[in-house]
Length: 74
Image 1: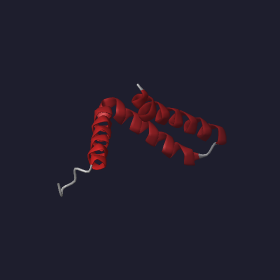
Image 2 (image 1 turned 120 degrees about the vertical axis):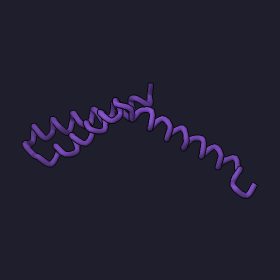
Image 3 (image 1 turned 135 degrees about the horizontal axis):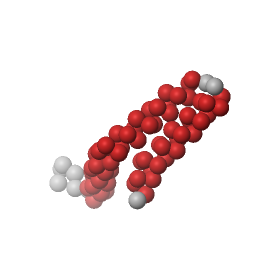
């Protein structure tokens, strides 16, 4: 599913690339974002996928509601 690729695959790739860059350059400044991306991927696997799906569905429904013009004044 494209949702999994965007919200899980890309952060995982970024975490691996930043970790490899930190090892190659021997620079500690790239470890923190790498760890943060890995922590996000763990959150996504443990149950964050449903949270993100609910938020995205809510945003889509809210945008559709706003575009139809059914605001509070109707």
